[in-house]
Image (cartoon, rainbow, N blue to C red; front, side, top):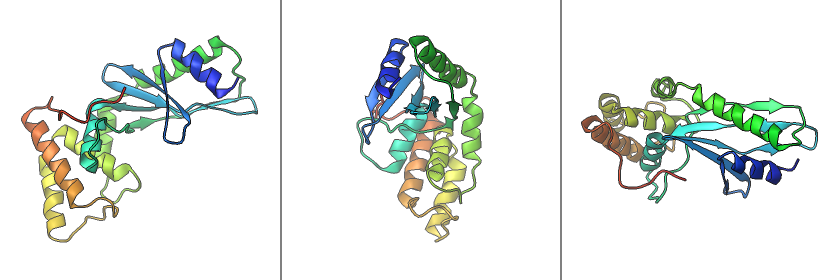
Amino acid sequence: MKREEFVNYLTKFGWSKHRDETSAWVVLMRIENMTICCVPILKAIPGVWLTPTLSIDDFDIAQTVISGKNSKFAKRSIILQTKINERESCNSESDVKRYSDMMLDWAQAQDIEQSLKQLRELPTNCLGAMPARHLAALAVNGDVEILSGYKDSFAEGDRLDFVPYIDEGYIERALDFAKKRRANPDWLPDKPKPRI
């Protein structure tokens, strides 16, 4: 089975399909305020490789706001990720349904609050996208004291070993978001809007 056929079958089970910035097919499923996202890969050698990711609207919006990008829609972020790799052929709609169910079962079994707690507890010297996720998790949780401490350290010239792209603007936007969440735990800005 080719990727496009696989993706089209997934739409029969409630997934929406989109092209990402590289024109690859991305499938998305909304469950309440959660988004499951996956780029299916089907190899010539029999097998299906899936890497579903999971996020929630508040986190996606926080990460977009904190990044400083003025965007109409929130960037899809990642709180959790897994791999589903099978060397079996995928030849039918029922095979695709099985993979859909595997991704949904995985997503529904996750403890989002625990995962956000782990992101909040990351060290400031973590790498890649993790520092931005760390700040978003703190902001969503309203962790004003921690973010105020980061702001004070930056003002004193101590970057706390954050990666170079995390600048004072990131910290200030995260702190501002956290203050608003502390005052109203359901607060979200008017934009960006959740994607989908």
